[in-house]
Length: 240
Image (cartoon, rainbow, N blue to C red; front, top):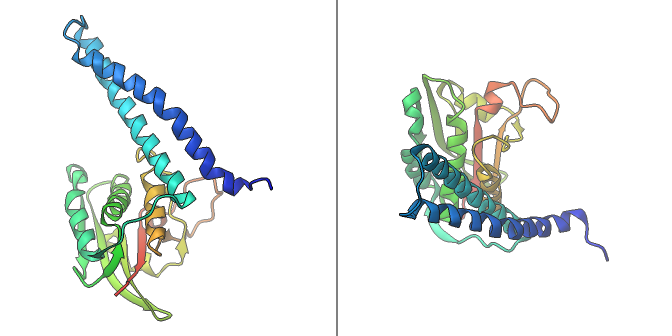
């Protein structure tokens, strides 16, 4: 029986990763050899060009690795680790390290419960997921702005969950109360970190969304609603 397009998709990604990985590795290897070659008679301008090319090649290799992880997650071949952790504590630790936007006077503050959100999960991948979400929101904010990551416990239909609302300081409650809309994970400059973040959160039984835009736009347009684009809500069910 022929495979459906949905079943073929992870295999196609896996093949693309395999085909891209070897030439990217070869190019990167030769560039590093040129950087270290004591006999290379490069001008300062040429050396700078080689250095920039090597950095870009490294970025390509990282993208290929992210593509590989997406294909494995979608195919069910990559298992998330399961260890006891407190999601709220983890979020606070990640936020402490995401402060490069302060040079634009854009600050990230963590509020709400600092513990009490025990789950069984993959700490490393959850850290990467929240790091990507925080950076995606912060990098698009004009300063001066304070972005809040507010940690809440909620219970719906008998299921207790840890919720993290990321929004401008004045819009946290509004973002939480508005109907759920899709989170825009197709943002330039972040590689595939956001598609990976969504898959990791969903792999823990959770969900990632943004407030529903008030203005209807075509699917190929970016929303012009600043609350919808500039906010994110993560919910992960508790296991204890």
